[in-house]
Image (cartoon, rainbow, N blue to C red; front, side, top):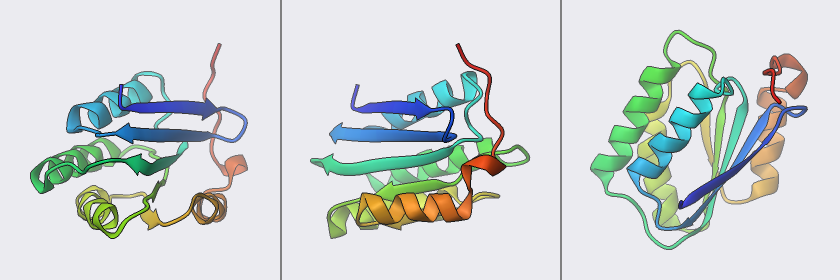
Length: 133
């Protein structure tokens, strides 16, 4: 799997790491898992600094549009995307434009800035915790 994630229920935060090449299927599988487990409302930080390539523009738009549809009319936490290159930033902007709905999506060059933005935009105590095992 090209995306691995950790969930912090106390922080209402999902931190996902992309490794090597991430596909639309990888992202949609992750999104399906978040929906199935009820953690869509949590804040999401996608660290894509370890990617070796990008998806096609068509795939980026497809994923963004599907994420937007999922977020329409239901609680869905903000997304921070961390990238390391201009090429990845451009790809992330395509996703951002297609995915923005009732929750914000923002692109960053470093993890710390992304985390600060999430904490300011959606403090953990304002997001309901999902029951878990």
